Image 1 (cartoon, rainbow, N blue to C red):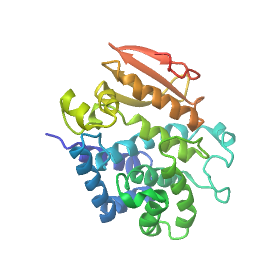
Image 2: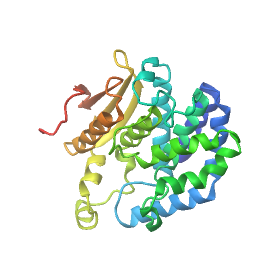
Image 3: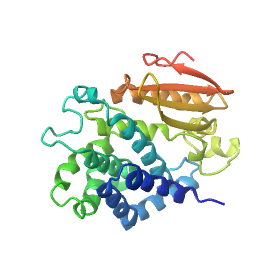
Length: 280
């Protein structure tokens, strides 16, 4: 029986080392995987979620979200018009730097992989994004001794707004928002609990039931629009996650570059980019 975590790691390394030859980003990812702080915190989050009938927020969620982020980055990297879509330009949050593709990939990878490190920890109530960025700075410095200080404010911003509650200020942030939102299929569930167990123990049971009704999510290169995000659903509760993804898309400022398709009984239905889907 295959191990999903190993498969996800292999897919990420294959993208970084073989497809893109981003050796620096690959080395940073290797450092993050070996970071004891990250491993321990994600292990706690997984245990916490399982005890409380919540969806995954551990290492597997981090890896799957990272793979989605890399796919989005790969497709959007050659969209030159994105340079005028954000206040501070394409590869830049602070306005003081101009990242190359390998460096941008590093920022997106680190931000997505670490975005939930402080989930469910009391000390995260202050500034979790800053705390995470501080903890991983050493992993960045080993590979980018002269660039890590420029990465940190971008990573902080990406982690702070990974839920997409605020409009994105750079492409890196937008990609993290969408990658986290796309990771909402049934493999996000931590167990096959009964409806009674979920209703009695989960404060937001719709999160469980909506993921349960999504068979899979694909992030693919589109024909007319650069990115297609395909939701394969088998129940009505799935629309909760799709609606939330659509809201994230609005705040990502990438609505002109991403198209949502919903597959029910293998029949694709495009979701209008201007719709809010709150009419049912």
